[in-house]
Length: 193
Image (cartoon, rainbow, N blue to C red; front, side, top):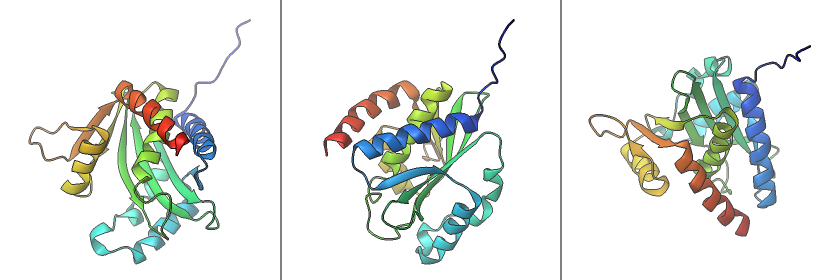
């Protein structure tokens, strides 16, 4: 008799990646937790927009549908010393057709100066790499960075490259094998901080 094992879902891969990311951050003594983004967290993101300068505001109020998407991997960062309120969030969608994770939105709400300042993308990439390892994804695309300065930051600091025909920086990409090599180097640095 053959044992039936249910196929893992994007949600299963996400939960596993978040568990591993939390262990990495705990070992590095970082006062932050990663959690799946839920409706209450999204409402906090929407409320947090009131305190963000207009040039940094993102349309969190339009993103409720992302919590219901079958291929969504949405997570947030909560500071351990701030009643576990969302301090940063990331919305992603996994594209099974090409086995790539799209980062749709990422934002640090800067509730207070914190470990996320200057590290949000780095910590999000840790979680993303762990997710890609779980689902055997081929890479990650950053969809429509908020401006050219942010796109340049991803390109220069994290070695993403522009895959648009007109070099606008609207879609950036990095494959999983390159991200794994970066992750191994960078995670060792974080643990040594």
